[in-house]
Length: 430
Image 1 (cartoon, rainbow, N blue to C red):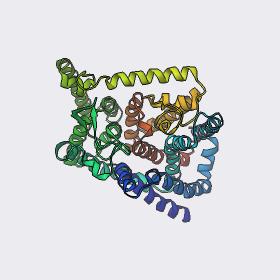
Image 2: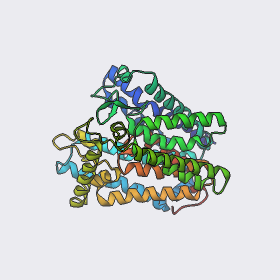
Image 3: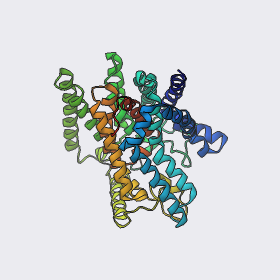
Image 4: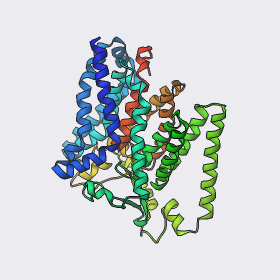
Protein backbone atom coordinates (compact mmCIF):
# COMPACT_ATOMS: atom_id res chain seq x y z
CA UNK A 1 0.00 0.00 0.00
CA UNK A 2 2.84 2.39 0.81
CA UNK A 3 4.48 1.73 -2.55
CA UNK A 4 1.29 2.48 -4.46
CA UNK A 5 0.70 5.72 -2.55
CA UNK A 6 4.28 6.78 -3.24
CA UNK A 7 3.90 5.95 -6.92
CA UNK A 8 0.61 7.85 -7.18
CA UNK A 9 2.01 10.96 -5.50
CA UNK A 10 5.13 10.81 -7.69
CA UNK A 11 2.89 10.42 -10.75
CA UNK A 12 1.11 13.66 -9.84
CA UNK A 13 4.44 15.49 -9.78
CA UNK A 14 5.52 13.93 -13.09
CA UNK A 15 2.17 14.95 -14.60
CA UNK A 16 2.72 18.53 -13.44
CA UNK A 17 6.19 18.47 -14.99
CA UNK A 18 4.80 17.23 -18.32
CA UNK A 19 2.26 20.06 -18.31
CA UNK A 20 4.86 22.74 -17.56
CA UNK A 21 7.55 21.59 -19.99
CA UNK A 22 6.09 23.28 -23.11
CA UNK A 23 6.26 26.62 -21.27
CA UNK A 24 9.66 26.06 -19.68
CA UNK A 25 11.54 28.31 -22.14
CA UNK A 26 9.27 31.31 -21.57
CA UNK A 27 9.01 30.92 -17.80
CA UNK A 28 12.70 30.25 -17.14
CA UNK A 29 13.88 33.03 -19.49
CA UNK A 30 11.49 35.53 -17.92
CA UNK A 31 12.44 34.55 -14.37
CA UNK A 32 16.17 34.26 -15.08
CA UNK A 33 16.33 37.62 -16.83
CA UNK A 34 14.72 39.26 -13.79
CA UNK A 35 16.43 37.53 -10.87
CA UNK A 36 19.68 36.47 -12.55
CA UNK A 37 21.35 33.03 -12.45
CA UNK A 38 19.67 32.06 -15.72
CA UNK A 39 21.48 28.71 -16.01
CA UNK A 40 20.40 27.72 -12.51
CA UNK A 41 16.80 28.67 -13.25
CA UNK A 42 16.83 26.69 -16.49
CA UNK A 43 17.77 23.42 -14.79
CA UNK A 44 14.76 23.44 -12.45
CA UNK A 45 13.37 20.42 -14.31
CA UNK A 46 16.62 18.46 -14.07
CA UNK A 47 16.73 19.19 -10.33
CA UNK A 48 13.14 17.98 -10.04
CA UNK A 49 13.90 14.82 -12.01
CA UNK A 50 16.85 14.13 -9.71
CA UNK A 51 14.53 14.45 -6.72
CA UNK A 52 11.97 12.17 -8.40
CA UNK A 53 14.70 9.59 -8.98
CA UNK A 54 14.82 8.93 -5.22
CA UNK A 55 11.27 7.50 -4.88
CA UNK A 56 11.63 5.89 -8.31
CA UNK A 57 14.74 3.99 -7.17
CA UNK A 58 13.00 2.94 -3.98
CA UNK A 59 10.04 1.64 -5.99
CA UNK A 60 12.41 -0.11 -8.39
CA UNK A 61 14.16 -2.07 -5.66
CA UNK A 62 10.89 -2.87 -3.90
CA UNK A 63 9.54 -4.62 -7.01
CA UNK A 64 10.85 -8.14 -7.80
CA UNK A 65 9.65 -7.75 -11.40
CA UNK A 66 11.55 -4.48 -11.90
CA UNK A 67 14.69 -5.84 -10.24
CA UNK A 68 14.60 -8.87 -12.52
CA UNK A 69 14.07 -6.63 -15.53
CA UNK A 70 17.00 -4.45 -14.49
CA UNK A 71 19.31 -7.47 -14.27
CA UNK A 72 18.22 -9.20 -17.47
CA UNK A 73 17.04 -6.42 -19.76
CA UNK A 74 19.40 -5.69 -22.63
CA UNK A 75 17.87 -2.21 -22.89
CA UNK A 76 18.62 -1.41 -19.24
CA UNK A 77 22.19 -2.66 -19.69
CA UNK A 78 22.67 -0.54 -22.82
CA UNK A 79 21.39 2.57 -21.07
CA UNK A 80 23.79 1.92 -18.19
CA UNK A 81 26.66 1.43 -20.66
CA UNK A 82 25.68 4.64 -22.49
CA UNK A 83 25.88 6.54 -19.19
CA UNK A 84 29.23 4.92 -18.38
CA UNK A 85 30.72 5.88 -21.76
CA UNK A 86 29.69 9.48 -21.21
CA UNK A 87 31.30 9.67 -17.78
CA UNK A 88 34.46 7.82 -18.85
CA UNK A 89 35.01 9.99 -21.94
CA UNK A 90 34.14 13.09 -19.94
CA UNK A 91 36.91 12.35 -17.44
CA UNK A 92 39.30 11.55 -20.29
CA UNK A 93 38.41 14.80 -22.07
CA UNK A 94 39.04 16.83 -18.91
CA UNK A 95 42.42 15.21 -18.32
CA UNK A 96 43.49 15.81 -21.93
CA UNK A 97 42.19 19.40 -22.07
CA UNK A 98 39.63 18.60 -24.73
CA UNK A 99 36.88 20.29 -22.71
CA UNK A 100 36.18 22.20 -19.52
CA UNK A 101 33.97 21.24 -16.62
CA UNK A 102 31.17 23.63 -17.61
CA UNK A 103 30.79 22.12 -21.08
CA UNK A 104 31.01 18.61 -19.65
CA UNK A 105 28.26 19.17 -17.07
CA UNK A 106 26.02 20.81 -19.66
CA UNK A 107 26.56 17.93 -22.11
CA UNK A 108 25.87 15.28 -19.49
CA UNK A 109 22.60 17.01 -18.66
CA UNK A 110 21.27 17.36 -22.20
CA UNK A 111 22.52 13.95 -23.41
CA UNK A 112 21.35 11.84 -20.48
CA UNK A 113 18.39 13.57 -18.83
CA UNK A 114 15.71 12.08 -21.07
CA UNK A 115 16.97 8.51 -20.64
CA UNK A 116 17.02 9.02 -16.88
CA UNK A 117 13.47 10.39 -17.03
CA UNK A 118 12.45 7.37 -19.12
CA UNK A 119 13.60 5.05 -16.32
CA UNK A 120 11.93 7.19 -13.63
CA UNK A 121 8.57 7.13 -15.45
CA UNK A 122 8.87 3.41 -16.17
CA UNK A 123 9.52 2.58 -12.50
CA UNK A 124 6.70 4.78 -11.21
CA UNK A 125 4.18 3.66 -13.83
CA UNK A 126 4.89 0.01 -13.03
CA UNK A 127 3.00 0.68 -9.77
CA UNK A 128 0.48 3.35 -10.77
CA UNK A 129 -1.47 3.71 -14.03
CA UNK A 130 -2.43 7.34 -13.37
CA UNK A 131 -0.05 8.75 -15.99
CA UNK A 132 -1.21 6.15 -18.49
CA UNK A 133 -4.88 7.00 -17.90
CA UNK A 134 -4.39 10.72 -18.41
CA UNK A 135 -1.53 10.85 -20.93
CA UNK A 136 -3.64 12.40 -23.71
CA UNK A 137 -4.83 15.26 -21.51
CA UNK A 138 -1.37 15.84 -20.06
CA UNK A 139 -0.01 16.04 -23.61
CA UNK A 140 -2.70 17.98 -25.47
CA UNK A 141 -4.00 20.56 -22.99
CA UNK A 142 -0.62 22.33 -22.82
CA UNK A 143 -0.23 21.82 -26.58
CA UNK A 144 -3.49 23.71 -27.15
CA UNK A 145 -1.95 26.74 -25.43
CA UNK A 146 1.26 26.35 -27.44
CA UNK A 147 -0.69 26.25 -30.70
CA UNK A 148 -2.92 29.13 -29.63
CA UNK A 149 0.01 31.33 -28.71
CA UNK A 150 1.70 30.42 -31.98
CA UNK A 151 -1.35 31.64 -33.90
CA UNK A 152 -1.31 34.87 -31.91
CA UNK A 153 2.36 35.32 -32.78
CA UNK A 154 1.60 35.00 -36.45
CA UNK A 155 -1.58 37.03 -36.77
CA UNK A 156 -1.90 39.37 -33.76
CA UNK A 157 1.21 40.02 -31.67
CA UNK A 158 4.23 42.14 -32.66
CA UNK A 159 7.03 40.03 -34.10
CA UNK A 160 9.34 40.83 -31.15
CA UNK A 161 6.67 40.41 -28.45
CA UNK A 162 8.80 37.88 -26.54
CA UNK A 163 11.36 40.56 -25.70
CA UNK A 164 9.03 41.46 -22.82
CA UNK A 165 9.83 38.06 -21.30
CA UNK A 166 13.59 38.53 -21.35
CA UNK A 167 14.22 37.14 -24.84
CA UNK A 168 17.35 38.65 -26.36
CA UNK A 169 20.53 37.62 -28.21
CA UNK A 170 22.00 36.69 -24.80
CA UNK A 171 19.15 34.37 -23.83
CA UNK A 172 16.82 33.22 -26.63
CA UNK A 173 16.22 35.35 -29.75
CA UNK A 174 12.85 37.10 -29.55
CA UNK A 175 12.12 36.11 -33.16
CA UNK A 176 13.59 34.01 -35.93
CA UNK A 177 13.54 34.44 -39.69
CA UNK A 178 14.25 32.44 -42.82
CA UNK A 179 17.72 33.38 -44.05
CA UNK A 180 17.61 36.76 -42.23
CA UNK A 181 14.52 37.90 -44.16
CA UNK A 182 12.01 39.71 -41.89
CA UNK A 183 9.27 39.00 -44.41
CA UNK A 184 9.53 35.35 -43.36
CA UNK A 185 9.38 35.41 -39.58
CA UNK A 186 9.16 31.94 -38.07
CA UNK A 187 6.71 31.02 -35.33
CA UNK A 188 8.43 29.62 -32.23
CA UNK A 189 5.53 29.96 -29.75
CA UNK A 190 6.62 29.10 -26.19
CA UNK A 191 9.46 26.78 -27.22
CA UNK A 192 13.13 27.59 -27.67
CA UNK A 193 12.87 28.15 -31.40
CA UNK A 194 11.05 27.38 -34.61
CA UNK A 195 12.74 24.04 -35.27
CA UNK A 196 12.06 22.75 -31.71
CA UNK A 197 8.44 23.84 -32.15
CA UNK A 198 8.20 21.95 -35.43
CA UNK A 199 9.69 18.79 -33.92
CA UNK A 200 7.30 19.08 -30.95
CA UNK A 201 4.33 19.22 -33.33
CA UNK A 202 5.50 15.96 -34.94
CA UNK A 203 4.44 14.40 -31.63
CA UNK A 204 1.39 16.57 -31.01
CA UNK A 205 -0.43 16.41 -34.36
CA UNK A 206 -0.64 12.57 -34.48
CA UNK A 207 -1.92 12.64 -30.89
CA UNK A 208 -4.66 15.10 -31.93
CA UNK A 209 -6.17 12.41 -34.19
CA UNK A 210 -7.18 10.55 -30.99
CA UNK A 211 -9.30 13.38 -29.61
CA UNK A 212 -12.84 12.01 -29.42
CA UNK A 213 -14.72 15.26 -29.93
CA UNK A 214 -14.67 15.84 -33.68
CA UNK A 215 -14.97 19.63 -33.48
CA UNK A 216 -12.02 19.95 -31.10
CA UNK A 217 -10.05 17.45 -33.16
CA UNK A 218 -10.55 19.45 -36.36
CA UNK A 219 -9.78 22.77 -34.63
CA UNK A 220 -6.63 21.34 -33.09
CA UNK A 221 -5.41 19.80 -36.34
CA UNK A 222 -6.06 22.96 -38.39
CA UNK A 223 -4.32 25.13 -35.80
CA UNK A 224 -1.44 22.67 -35.53
CA UNK A 225 -0.90 22.55 -39.29
CA UNK A 226 -0.99 26.36 -39.57
CA UNK A 227 1.56 26.79 -36.77
CA UNK A 228 3.75 24.04 -38.22
CA UNK A 229 3.69 25.65 -41.66
CA UNK A 230 4.70 29.07 -40.38
CA UNK A 231 7.49 27.58 -38.30
CA UNK A 232 9.08 26.98 -41.74
CA UNK A 233 10.69 23.86 -40.28
CA UNK A 234 11.03 21.73 -43.37
CA UNK A 235 12.47 18.78 -41.47
CA UNK A 236 9.34 18.81 -39.28
CA UNK A 237 7.11 18.90 -42.37
CA UNK A 238 8.82 15.77 -43.70
CA UNK A 239 8.81 14.11 -40.30
CA UNK A 240 5.09 14.77 -39.84
CA UNK A 241 4.21 13.39 -43.28
CA UNK A 242 6.09 10.20 -42.41
CA UNK A 243 4.39 10.00 -39.01
CA UNK A 244 0.89 10.48 -40.42
CA UNK A 245 1.49 7.94 -43.19
CA UNK A 246 2.63 5.36 -40.65
CA UNK A 247 -0.29 6.21 -38.38
CA UNK A 248 -2.72 5.51 -41.18
CA UNK A 249 -1.08 2.19 -41.98
CA UNK A 250 -0.44 0.88 -38.45
CA UNK A 251 -3.31 2.27 -36.44
CA UNK A 252 -6.32 2.06 -38.69
CA UNK A 253 -5.30 -0.83 -40.92
CA UNK A 254 -7.74 -1.19 -43.79
CA UNK A 255 -10.48 0.82 -42.13
CA UNK A 256 -12.26 3.79 -43.66
CA UNK A 257 -10.39 6.14 -41.31
CA UNK A 258 -7.09 4.73 -42.51
CA UNK A 259 -7.98 5.49 -46.08
CA UNK A 260 -9.01 9.01 -45.09
CA UNK A 261 -5.69 9.70 -43.34
CA UNK A 262 -3.66 8.23 -46.19
CA UNK A 263 -5.72 10.28 -48.65
CA UNK A 264 -4.99 13.45 -46.65
CA UNK A 265 -1.27 12.65 -46.62
CA UNK A 266 -1.31 11.91 -50.36
CA UNK A 267 -3.15 15.16 -51.12
CA UNK A 268 -0.77 17.17 -48.93
CA UNK A 269 2.19 15.56 -50.68
CA UNK A 270 0.79 16.23 -54.15
CA UNK A 271 -0.11 19.81 -53.27
CA UNK A 272 3.38 20.34 -51.87
CA UNK A 273 5.05 18.88 -54.96
CA UNK A 274 2.83 20.90 -57.29
CA UNK A 275 3.46 24.07 -55.33
CA UNK A 276 7.20 23.51 -55.26
CA UNK A 277 7.29 22.98 -59.01
CA UNK A 278 5.04 25.96 -59.79
CA UNK A 279 6.91 28.34 -57.52
CA UNK A 280 10.45 27.18 -58.21
CA UNK A 281 11.34 30.51 -59.82
CA UNK A 282 9.64 32.69 -57.23
CA UNK A 283 11.89 34.46 -54.72
CA UNK A 284 9.30 34.24 -51.96
CA UNK A 285 8.92 30.52 -52.51
CA UNK A 286 12.69 30.10 -52.50
CA UNK A 287 12.76 31.72 -49.06
CA UNK A 288 9.78 29.90 -47.57
CA UNK A 289 10.33 26.43 -49.02
CA UNK A 290 13.93 26.15 -50.15
CA UNK A 291 15.69 28.75 -47.93
CA UNK A 292 17.91 29.55 -50.89
CA UNK A 293 16.95 33.02 -52.04
CA UNK A 294 20.06 35.08 -52.68
CA UNK A 295 18.07 38.20 -51.79
CA UNK A 296 17.88 37.29 -48.11
CA UNK A 297 21.32 36.01 -47.13
CA UNK A 298 24.80 35.67 -48.60
CA UNK A 299 24.99 32.04 -47.47
CA UNK A 300 21.76 30.05 -47.32
CA UNK A 301 20.84 27.89 -44.35
CA UNK A 302 20.92 24.88 -46.69
CA UNK A 303 24.56 25.49 -47.53
CA UNK A 304 25.44 26.04 -43.88
CA UNK A 305 23.70 22.82 -42.85
CA UNK A 306 25.32 20.79 -45.63
CA UNK A 307 28.76 22.11 -44.66
CA UNK A 308 28.15 21.35 -40.98
CA UNK A 309 27.06 17.77 -41.68
CA UNK A 310 30.01 17.20 -44.00
CA UNK A 311 32.48 18.57 -41.44
CA UNK A 312 30.94 16.46 -38.66
CA UNK A 313 31.12 13.29 -40.74
CA UNK A 314 34.77 14.04 -41.53
CA UNK A 315 35.47 14.62 -37.84
CA UNK A 316 33.87 11.29 -36.86
CA UNK A 317 35.80 9.48 -39.58
CA UNK A 318 39.11 10.79 -38.23
CA UNK A 319 38.16 10.59 -34.53
CA UNK A 320 36.02 7.43 -34.26
CA UNK A 321 36.53 7.20 -30.48
CA UNK A 322 35.07 10.67 -29.86
CA UNK A 323 36.49 13.66 -28.01
CA UNK A 324 34.21 13.61 -24.97
CA UNK A 325 30.73 14.98 -24.12
CA UNK A 326 30.76 18.74 -24.40
CA UNK A 327 33.06 18.93 -27.42
CA UNK A 328 30.16 19.03 -29.91
CA UNK A 329 26.55 20.15 -30.03
CA UNK A 330 25.04 23.01 -28.00
CA UNK A 331 27.37 22.29 -25.06
CA UNK A 332 30.41 23.05 -27.20
CA UNK A 333 29.54 26.77 -27.11
CA UNK A 334 30.58 26.63 -23.44
CA UNK A 335 33.83 24.83 -24.19
CA UNK A 336 36.07 27.90 -24.01
CA UNK A 337 39.34 27.63 -25.85
CA UNK A 338 37.88 25.28 -28.45
CA UNK A 339 35.66 26.05 -31.45
CA UNK A 340 31.98 25.18 -31.19
CA UNK A 341 31.02 22.19 -33.34
CA UNK A 342 27.42 21.99 -34.49
CA UNK A 343 26.84 18.93 -36.66
CA UNK A 344 23.22 19.73 -37.68
CA UNK A 345 22.66 16.00 -37.14
CA UNK A 346 22.00 14.63 -33.66
CA UNK A 347 23.53 11.22 -34.32
CA UNK A 348 26.74 12.71 -35.70
CA UNK A 349 26.89 14.95 -32.63
CA UNK A 350 26.74 11.89 -30.37
CA UNK A 351 29.46 10.23 -32.47
CA UNK A 352 31.65 13.33 -32.17
CA UNK A 353 31.25 13.26 -28.39
CA UNK A 354 31.13 9.55 -27.52
CA UNK A 355 32.54 7.94 -30.62
CA UNK A 356 31.03 5.55 -33.11
CA UNK A 357 30.39 3.09 -30.28
CA UNK A 358 28.30 5.62 -28.35
CA UNK A 359 26.29 6.48 -31.45
CA UNK A 360 25.61 2.79 -32.21
CA UNK A 361 24.50 2.16 -28.63
CA UNK A 362 22.14 5.12 -28.76
CA UNK A 363 20.69 3.95 -32.08
CA UNK A 364 20.13 0.46 -30.65
CA UNK A 365 18.38 1.97 -27.62
CA UNK A 366 16.07 3.85 -29.98
CA UNK A 367 15.50 0.72 -32.03
CA UNK A 368 14.67 -1.43 -29.00
CA UNK A 369 12.21 1.11 -27.61
CA UNK A 370 10.66 1.44 -31.07
CA UNK A 371 10.38 -2.34 -31.39
CA UNK A 372 8.56 -2.63 -28.07
CA UNK A 373 6.23 0.18 -29.10
CA UNK A 374 5.54 -1.74 -32.29
CA UNK A 375 4.70 -4.87 -30.31
CA UNK A 376 2.33 -2.73 -28.19
CA UNK A 377 0.90 -0.84 -31.17
CA UNK A 378 -2.70 -1.80 -30.34
CA UNK A 379 -2.41 0.75 -27.53
CA UNK A 380 -3.07 4.37 -28.54
CA UNK A 381 -0.15 5.82 -26.58
CA UNK A 382 2.25 3.33 -28.15
CA UNK A 383 0.91 4.20 -31.62
CA UNK A 384 1.45 7.92 -31.14
CA UNK A 385 4.96 7.40 -29.76
CA UNK A 386 5.90 4.96 -32.50
CA UNK A 387 4.87 7.11 -35.45
CA UNK A 388 6.30 10.26 -33.85
CA UNK A 389 9.59 8.43 -33.20
CA UNK A 390 9.83 7.72 -36.93
CA UNK A 391 9.18 11.38 -37.73
CA UNK A 392 11.51 12.75 -35.05
CA UNK A 393 14.25 10.39 -36.23
CA UNK A 394 14.06 12.06 -39.64
CA UNK A 395 14.16 15.48 -37.98
CA UNK A 396 17.29 14.47 -36.05
CA UNK A 397 19.09 13.76 -39.32
CA UNK A 398 19.23 17.50 -40.04
CA UNK A 399 18.98 19.04 -36.56
CA UNK A 400 19.47 18.35 -32.84
CA UNK A 401 15.87 17.57 -31.87
CA UNK A 402 16.69 15.44 -28.81
CA UNK A 403 18.70 18.29 -27.27
CA UNK A 404 15.45 20.23 -26.81
CA UNK A 405 14.33 19.64 -23.24
CA UNK A 406 10.60 19.96 -23.96
CA UNK A 407 10.40 17.37 -26.71
CA UNK A 408 12.95 14.90 -25.34
CA UNK A 409 11.57 14.79 -21.79
CA UNK A 410 7.94 14.56 -22.89
CA UNK A 411 8.54 11.87 -25.50
CA UNK A 412 10.87 9.68 -23.44
CA UNK A 413 8.82 10.17 -20.28
CA UNK A 414 5.69 8.96 -22.08
CA UNK A 415 7.71 6.09 -23.56
CA UNK A 416 8.51 4.99 -20.01
CA UNK A 417 4.79 5.15 -19.19
CA UNK A 418 3.87 3.16 -22.31
CA UNK A 419 6.39 0.37 -21.64
CA UNK A 420 5.99 0.17 -17.86
CA UNK A 421 3.80 -2.94 -18.09
CA UNK A 422 6.49 -5.05 -19.78
CA UNK A 423 8.52 -5.88 -16.65
CA UNK A 424 5.28 -6.89 -14.89
CA UNK A 425 4.40 -9.21 -17.77
CA UNK A 426 7.80 -10.85 -17.50
CA UNK A 427 9.29 -9.35 -20.66
CA UNK A 428 12.85 -9.35 -19.32
CA UNK A 429 15.16 -9.45 -22.32
CA UNK A 430 14.03 -6.40 -24.28
